[in-house]
Length: 262
Image (cartoon, rainbow, N blue to C red; front, top):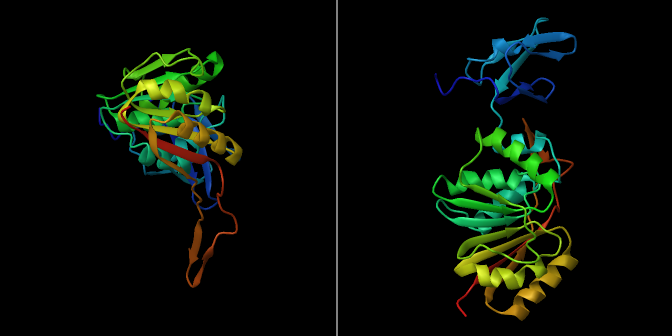
C-alpha cells in the first residue's frame, strides 16, 4: 500500500478555504460526512492521497489533509486541559528532548505533550508517564494511539503519585504538569542524572515563585530560568499589513533547572 494514501481509521481534516472551516473526521468504510445538506463518502477518501480536492454531492469543494501535530491536538477529545502547541514547542527546546533520552512526565493529561515528546524521543527513547487519574490515562492513551498509529512500545504508563516518590532513576529529563511541583523537587533531585533537566509548566506566577524558592533551597540545581511565550499573528493582504486584532498571550510559565552533581 502506498504510504501516502489515506487509510481507514486515520483522522483527517476536510478544509474549506473559502470559509476557513476545518472539519475533522475519522475514516471508516461505509460512512459519510455531511455538510450543509451535502455529503461525501469516506470511501471516496480512503486510498486517495492527501492534499487533493474533494467534491461533495451538491458541488461543494474542500481539500483533504492529514492534520499536523498542532491541528490534531487542538481537535482531539480531551479529559484534562491540553498544553497548547506554542508552549509544547518551547518545552521540547527548553527541556532538550532528544532521540534516545529517558524522560519522566507527570501528569499525562489528555496526551498532547506526550505525543510531541514521543515523536522527538524516537524508538530508542523512553517516556515514563505518572498519572493518578484513570480517566485521564484512558483518554490520553486513546489520543496517543490514534496519533502514533498504535500503542507506542516505548511509553510506560504508571498509576503513581509523583508527590510521594519517583521510583525511576537515572533520568535524563523530568517534565511536570502538576499544580504543586515544589513537592517533587526532592524526588527529582535523586532521580535526575547530573546534567539532567527539570521543567515545570505552571499557570500562575505565585506557583512559580514557590517552585523557584524550593529549587534554590534544595540545592543541586543551577541555571534556574522562568519564561513565557506570546504569539501574535499578522494579516498580510496586499498593502494592508497589520497585526491581528487578537493574539495568544499568556497560557503558562515554563520553569527550567539543570541538575548538578552533589
